[in-house]
Image (cartoon, rainbow, N blue to C red; front, side, top):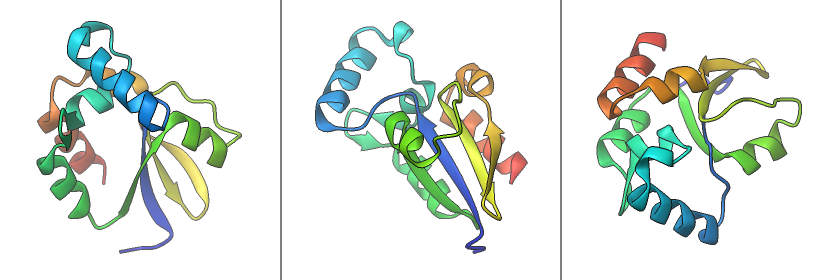
Length: 119
């Protein structure tokens, strides 16, 4: 694994227990208005979907998951539309999957195929 390269998936949700509870309720009771497609297709009511965890753990690139507040704290110069994914190579961050692409995904399998095709 190349330590100079990593993928960063950024949720359109803030971190913290209270935010997680609010997101879970929103996702279950008003899924059509839930603002984080990445969350919706990679998490269920018990946590991260095992297929997604196994897939990301098996990649030959480091993978991190950040909430929007965590991403904004680390990458202040960025102001992306979320959810999205970014690749970091040689200390340069650039888009990997845009919010438009992320929001067009129907299911987890489509996300996995999209990541595979771009790695």
